[in-house]
Amino acid sequence: MESHISFDQNLIDRYDRPGPRYTSYPTAVQFRDDFTESDYRAAAGRSRVLSLYFHIPFCDTICFYCACNKIATKNRARSKPYLRALDREMALQAAIFEHGQPVEQLHWGGGTPTFLNDEQMRWLMVRTREHFHLLDDDSGEYSIEIDPREVREDTLAVLREIGFNRMSLGLQDLDPEVQRAVNRIQSAERTFGAMRRARALGFRSVSIDLIYGLPRQTLESFSHTLDAVIAERPDRLSVFNYAHMPERFKPQRRIDAAELPPPPVKLEILRMAGKKLQDAGYVYIGMDHFALPDDELALAQERGELYRNFQGYSTHAHCDLLAFGVSAIGNVGDTYAQNVKDLDSYYAAIDRGELPIERGLHLSRDDCIRRDLIGELIRQFRLDFADFGQRWEIDIADYFVSELECLLPMQADGLLVLDEAGIHVTDAGRLLIRNICMVFDAYLGQTPARFSRVI
Image 1 (cartoon, rainbow, N blue to C red):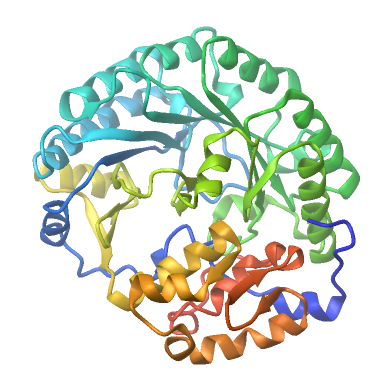
Image 2 (spheres, rainbow, N blue to C red; image 1 turned 60 degrees about the vertical axis):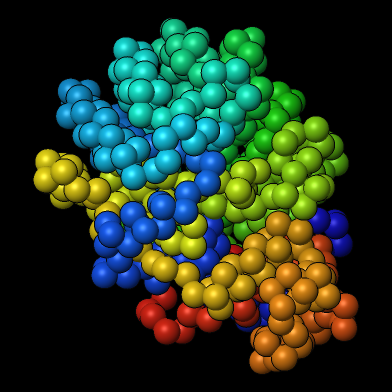
């Protein structure tokens, strides 16, 4: 994130194209409808330590930028049948996994998990403990996504009481004009007040989520937001690139595309954010994440133990990820499985006593090799050919002959250094790491583009 990094318009035009964020490889676009519950059960028979993800889809109000699977409703009673269905889905999943496998990681996402009231959150965690072996010594990484606008008087105390020790707070941007443009009015006092309260209650890690590229956002306005956030010293920050895809996500049609910052400004905002955060002592974890040097993400990156999943960067690569709720995606062994995306189909499957799996994928050996390589680049921004080749018993120069040739123009553009020893991504290349990873994606071009633009 050096201050001298700059991109001319020709380079921006060359690299600003649709591409995956690589929270998985292969991406969800490649999931197949013929992946069934029996395929999932076969993979579960080889299960390891567990990570659990719960998708709570409900939101009180809609944020125009949102691309998550969510249900905007004022009717809080809709959470009751959903919780009952989650309980039954947990019973179905628990029956096919080895009893007593410890749950090292747990995450509630959405939607807005705190759409649930305090008693419902207590109940869901109690039922989770009935079905799975949660750790009672606070050693697990149990996290939840928080909308500060949905934090009631006792919410954070209840979350800490039932076992959560990490949280991410959605902020996106503090500028009032940007907030009005995306229908998310949220004060600094409410956001940072929740963060301070969480620390007082003993939460071990608090993350702030920001988005760059939103309507009416400028380099100066986002700089002010960053200054305010840095002053509060969160343990982690996520700085996501807004993906404007109104053809896929209906709420985004209420955003005026003419008010979006153009690609050169977005790149300058990202460069500025990275420089400012690193000057403040944060470690650049990769793609869209920063952390303090003593945070577990930074330590895991230092040890080479970092990996990336559907929630972003994580420290639990050795876990099988079990996913619950509509649209949730799990990763068990060398398979991915995604639940149905609408409530009616979800409830119908649960009522039949079936896992609500809609699609999934068995990874081939080539998929696993490419997943590992793309993961190395995203996590470490380098690839050692000798180590990687030995791990997979391949000759990289032979296996990826065409891909390595495709990297040569990127080397000429200053995005990476390629030699006989490996690949080293430069500071400029870190800003376009998705483009570099795309070179090794065997599926790009086989299906219509369904990804956001890289810049």
